[in-house]
Image 1 (spheres, one colour):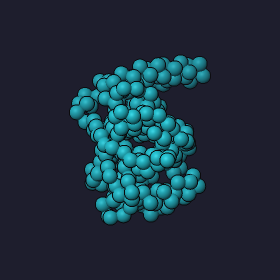
Image 2 (tube, rainbow, N blue to C red):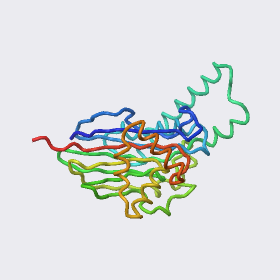
Image 3 (cartoon, rainbow, N blue to C red):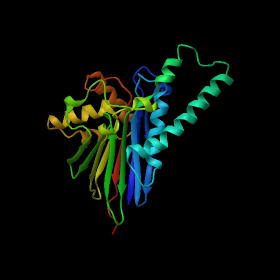
Image 4 (cartoon, rainbow, N blue to C red):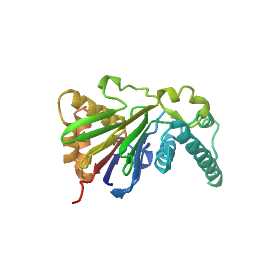
Length: 257
């Protein structure tokens, strides 16, 4: 199985790249081959402190797992990485002469928060795909010009301002497992998968409900300059809100004779 991946990302208009709090993995465009390939996007929530880093840890935990996509196993990988990274962050602040201030301590105690959408493509004896999602980052599968799958949200009215989130503080994950969405399906050569965070996903679902084919607009914008101009137009026309934007485009290669 060969998959071509392209990723596009932008911080909120008016923010710097350092303030971008979404995450994606793998973190480069290119062709990926194997009998199991994993891809993920996540949206760090602004109500948490250091949520962008937590989102990065979550996508890596998903993509570097081998035999599981279950949330308890992913958290078992992610939480130790978070604790190590947080300690490194605190030590670095001390060495730089700017230790954590009293007003930052409640935020650190509360923790970081993020959505997660992970997709695994399988070939070999058990071909197909499975996806894991919590929150409003979404995956869409398109085949032969038609939408095959939308998950975990396929209703534009279901997008809201308070999605379910994964917390870096385990005490804040009560009820988390009941909110995780799992899905499975098949793939065919030529299928395209789109993984995206909520601002663009909301637009995508709304366009589908209106009878449009939003994947054609994405295909036309699959160039960095074109993507920047296209999303700027969507914001200017109030079709998407001003938020971090992440789009991971995957295409399963056609069979080679």
